[in-house]
Image 1 (spheres, rainbow, N blue to C red):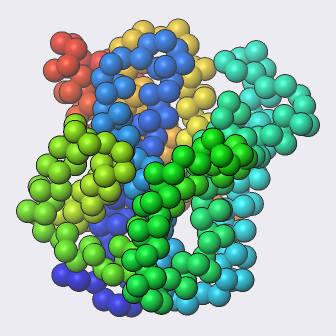
Image 2: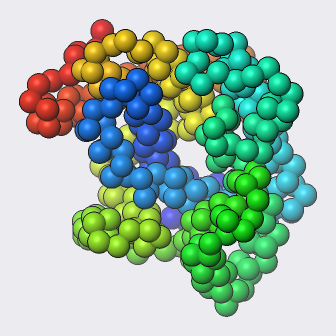
Length: 360
């Protein structure tokens, strides 16, 4: 059933799929642990790879959709939007760049890639991400640049022709070779690769295209199209097919399991910001473990990431009971992640012939 037009409406399937998107992101980060320790089981690489065309595109797609639902549709002014994103994105960006730099600096010889005590290197962490402790924070930099285009998005949403033209432009610029033209500063030379997903999210929710995907038959067809596109086409077409698949599948699942990922899906921003901390911690802890134990970390680390990352409060400010509520959410997530472990254990056993070690 199509949702109402009330601005405060919550789309259950969107919340559910955002929970899944952070699971995919964390799983990708976790497989980097095995790569770092040299114990990268092929299954641990294969499963996240299948979702590579979806993982970040869907994350950015939902960001664009939420911008439309919560800001553009409510007719927020540009000044109000910029002030809001300064508080929600820019300040956390500065804090966590500093946090990850100091974390690796204090780790010293324990860090696999030590960082120097240098003001210039620290400054580089804010605008050059590859090879720096702030590498995964490129997403926040990209979001800031996309949010800077808010006046443009508001203008094109007022006109149907302009909306379609903007969508076609974003598709066209996606294929432009700007990586070697623009400077590698603040990830600006990759912005054109993500504009299409962000604006597709705005366009998708502006015209309520999700009303056409709310069917189990569409969900099955979308999975088939994504699988075929993944094997044959690749690129932008596969990512768009994957986004549509996520929407259709999410709508079907939400009707049957509306509370799926409910223990943590409202904390995906915190999980994203802190997941690399737990990844680095696990990499240090798992340096000399067996491959089966390392394989188990592929499924258990999301739980660790959640328990570590849910603790920070929302950026609206501290709440007196935030730590208690966060611990309760982390504890509640154990059952869901235990189910994830059992699914993974079955797949591992079929793939490798033996089961991974049981969790402690």
